[in-house]
Image (cartoon, rainbow, N blue to C red; front, side):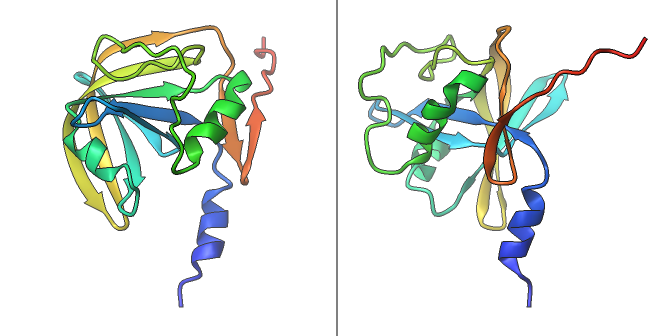
Length: 162
């Protein structure tokens, strides 16, 4: 028998960044969630991917979205990550909300942001894998928030060897 808990713990040894993915549903309402399943795919054309559990209540909104954005959170945005990781409540309540150039809700103060045109969706086990073409991006000097072993963390920058 395959031990899913042990497998998940082993996966947790891989340090990842923390992202919030945003879009608008068919009625124009903003949707968003915290995800650490983000990766670059291609430089030409510029493409990225992320995945979402097939059991997610946000699945249909992202399946139908023509555009979405991936926000790489800054180390100061742990509370934002927790807010978007919870189900149910309006995650955008009280936020001054604008859209990025691609049309997805914009979260300010991130380390980087990738605005994407939805291109492909693949099914991978119990997750949907969303592949997008980057049409706009920005980067700041903020240190990224990382996740490792079930906990948030931050990078320790070492001096470059001479």
